[in-house]
Image 1 (cartoon, rainbow, N blue to C red):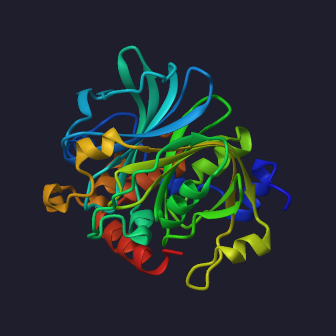
Image 2: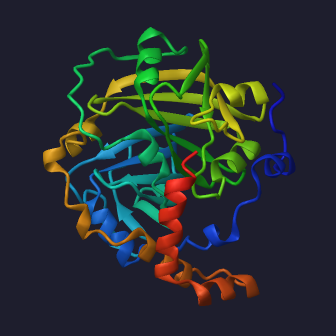
Image 3: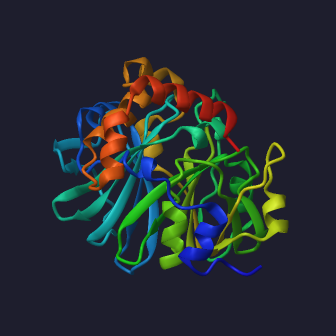
Length: 335
C-alpha cells in the first residue's frame, strides 16, 4: 500500500483544487459569517500544543459563544495547552447541514482570522448528524497510545469526525468527515482509515498531509457527551482494495486517509455539555440563517484573488444559478 508522496501524484488521483471553489474564501468575517457565528453553539478547534503535537478539541457554549470582536478577530476560549501559531475552527450550527470554516492563528489576544468560508453540507447529510437520537450514557474515559476496545467501539458508532491538519508553513485547517457509522474503519490496533468523499473540491487536508503528516481526528457520536481524539500521522492511499473496502452506494472513494495513531483520548466534553449539542429542544431556528447559495455567491464576489479568470467568475456569479447547482450536487454527488 504505497502512500501518495507528492502533490503531482495526489492531483493525478483526486484532481486539482477547483478554482471556482477557492474563490468562495474571504479574508474577514462578513455579515453572513457573523450571522452564522451568532447561531453557532459549538466549534471544533484545531491547534498545536506546547509539545508541538497537532490537537483537535470541541469548544462550545450558548449560541454566539464565539464573539466577533472585529472583522478579523474572534473571542473564543482557547485550550490552555495551545501554543501560539496556526489554528482552525469548524463552526457547527445544530440542525444546519453547512459548516463555517475559519482559519487563522491563536495567541495571547484570541483568534485572528485569515480566511473564512462556508463548507458544503455533504458530510453532515451523509452522517445524519442532527437526526433525533436518544441520550447515550457512555462513561468510559482514557488516554492511551493505542485504539483500545472502548475507543474502537466509539469509533465504530461515530458517523461524523473532524480532521485537523496544517501545511508546510504551519497554516491550519479543520475539515468535516461524515459517513454512515462504521466507515471510520479500524485497520489495526493503531491504524484508522477514513474515506475521502466528495466535498467542496478544495482537497486542503490531502494537500496538507503531503506536506506535513501530523493530524488530529475528533470523532462524535450523536447523543454521547464524549469525544474521541486520535492524534498521529497520516498518509494518503489510492490502493484499489482499500478504496473498495470503503465503498458506499457502489462508489469507492478516490483516496483514503490512513492515520497511524500515537495517542487516543476518550473523554467527556465540556463543550458538548455547554452547547447542549444533542438537545433538539435547544437548537435554534435555522430558517433565519442566510441561504448557503447566497453566502457562496457573495463570497465569490468579495474574494480579492487577481487574474482574468477570477474577475470573470466574480462577474458571472449568480445566486439563483448557484442554488440550483448546489441542490443538484447534493442530490447526485454525495458519494
